[in-house]
Structure formats: C-alpha cells, structure tokens
Image 1 (cartoon, helix red, strand yellow):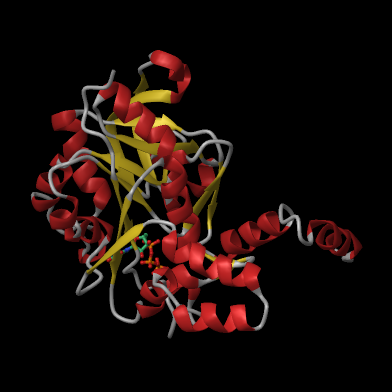
Image 2 (cartoon, rainbow, N blue to C red):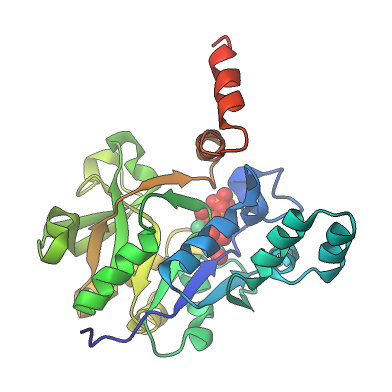
Length: 296
Ligand code: UTP
C-alpha cells in the first residue's frame, strides 16, 4: 500500500518562444505544430490521460490561444460535421475536449522553464505533480509519465526521466551525475542523482544520461525554484532548482523504457513525423512504399 500522496496533476509548460522553429512559430505556437494528424501538445495530454492523471495545467503565454481553443468544446464544428454525416470526425473533435480537465495559467514573460513551472505553483498546491515538455514525444508500451509515477508511489522521492545520448549531442541536454541505486523492479534503471549539469561540453559531461522532458516532482520544488537565481540567458533554469532538490530531498534519475523524439527541433520533428506516419494504420503501407521509392 502506498503511503505517499497520489499524483493527480501535470504541468505542461508551453510558453516558450519556439525560436528554433521560426518562421513557423511566428504566429502560431510550436505546441500546435502537427505530427501527422495531432498537434504536439496533444501527445503529452494523451500521455497524462493514459498515466491516470486527472488535471492538466498548461502554462501559456502571448499568442497561445490556439492551444486553449484546441482543448475547448467546439459545438459549431461538431454540429456541422454531424449535419454532413461525418459522425466519426464529430466524435473525434468531441473526444479532445472530453479527454480531461485542463486549466491554464499565463507566464507573462518567457523567463525560463523553471519560471514556467513555478508559475503553476498555486494551481498545483501542496502535492506531487508531473511535468511534461510538450515538444518531446515519448512512445513506448507504458507511458513514461506512468513509469515515473510508479517510482514516486513506491519511494516518495521525485524522479526525472533520462536516456542514453550520443556523446556529441550531450551539450544539448541537462546531464546527470548519478550512482546506481538498484531496487524494486527497476534494477539498473534507477539511479540516485548526485549532480546535474546543464548543456555540458562533451569532455565535461559526468555521464551520457540526458534529461528527457518528463519529471515527477514533489511540491518542495517550488521552494527550490524560489531560491534559484536566474542562470544562463537570464532565465530561471529548472535544472538549477533540481540540483537543490536533489541535495535536500533526494532525486532519482530513471532510465525510462521507450523512444523519445525531440520534436521542438526541425530534424527531430521530421523524424517523429516519419516514424509516426509509418505507424499510422490508415496509410503506413503506402507511405512505406513511397519512402522505398525515393532515390536517395
Ligand atoms: P525550449 O527551450 O525547448 O522551448 O523549452 P522554446 O523556448 O519554446 O524553444 P526555442 O529553444 O526558442 O526553440 C522547453 C519547454 O519549456 C517551455 C517551452 O514552451 C517548452 O515546452 N518554456 C520555456 C516555457 O514555458 N517558458 C519559458 O520561459 C521557456
């Protein structure tokens, strides 16, 4: 039986400027770019639902209305589709707004991921919560967020998802210095965080384990964020607050099972698009045939 507070909420920071994707993100949020037929942020919302999370808090900013509209009811569109006999599509549109309960909070200025998480403090309250970065899609048999929740339920200690990253790409990640802490069913997958380094040079990286956009955090993280001064680029970095949390409360690095796609970057986005298209039952065969026919 678990003695730790149940995880009921997730925070999805979506207030960044998406500069890596300009000009596509000039007038629309990066989180609304579609991978095959769903906007990026819907993959994270579905991961929350599949993990058993009931309340989703999306941190938005200027120019992000499309996100709110996407998860809102759309009676006009549903009615029109039904009138045209397109019941399946009407159901699909309705399902998005019925999926879960979504609240919104605005980050007035994009002062960093840490600041975006802190913005959700009042809505989260005094309970553990998940954080999902919407531009990372994780695919696998068990939702990555659920995997972190299982670790929390068993240990009552926060956890961050990590994965092995090629050495020459470590400078794009937060990297953990961690020691094996095998226990329960997780064996080699569970490590105790000693230190975290944001975007290290390859020779300075303490391991090849990069942080991958999923976090399970206790409410004490808010206090850590409040004590975190602005870091790189004047932004409040989540990694800096996680370092404090690791020292004061402990923190697991958990090598999740699944495949991640960093779709906030153009190449990662293209890879996600191709791989999800190859899984889509509607057209995977013809898409595969098309790819095979390309003269590369
Ligand atoms: P990123 O750095 O990947 O996103 O932040 P970005 O800032 O939108 O994109 P680039 O780097 O300019 O291309 C990771 C996540 O944190 C959110 C982003 O929306 C993204 O989901 N974020 C970042 C905020 O919500 N607020 C911020 O101030 C910064």
